[in-house]
Length: 118
Image (tube, rainbow, N blue to C red; front, side, top):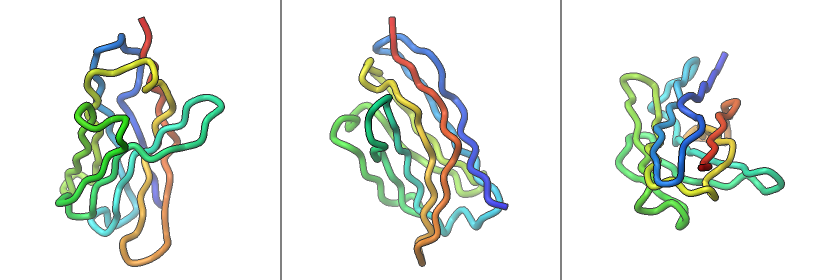
């Protein structure tokens, strides 16, 4: 049974930092592209950052470039999202997504809430 478990969300003041983690189990982690998505109330779920299966390639949404960093540790089956200089508009539920690099199989985590407010 595949599980993606996010952690690290919470309440932070504007300008602060958080580090999200997503621990994967039940799959060969190094075969999956990992992506962080977020969904704010009343809005669509959007991609924030993605990282290739080996970790050699990353992509970011324009809104987070220079502030967020995605990374992964394939020995720990975990992907991270370091979020710095947080803004109120970063408030959302953040989801971890795994996409199999050889096919269409994918999985979602349950999400973790990030709230940026003074």
